[in-house]
Length: 155
Ligand SMILES: [Zn+2]
Ligand SMILES: [Zn+2]
Ligand SMILES: [Zn+2]
Image (cartoon, protein in one colour):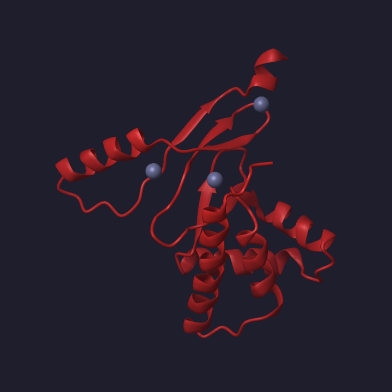
């Protein structure tokens, strides 16, 4: 379990409001699966699969179907408020795209599929410099480091 700082909690709260506003602006009413999925995403510190989000909602007693979870996630991705990550294993994972561009990257174990978030300010400035030297306007980037986690290395 990753400890949540005050800043992170404030960030995800702001994200939940932002996401709900985008959903409303796109002409969708609030409530039901949309609210449930947004609340679930706001409570997480890293990415999760649709199945994991669905399992958690059911465990919390929310009456949502897996198909609606997928529909809501597709909507949130299309509105740019959720990032879809394909980290291997054929499963898409989802995490909030925080307003202000605050983000992290991922270490992925190719054996068991464990995903661990990391942040590195030096990596961010190196990417910014590369972007500035290019003739592209760069809006986003992904960094995934793949390998074996300590458990799988020990096995
Ligand atoms: Zn993450
Ligand atoms: Zn592993
Ligand atoms: Zn970055």
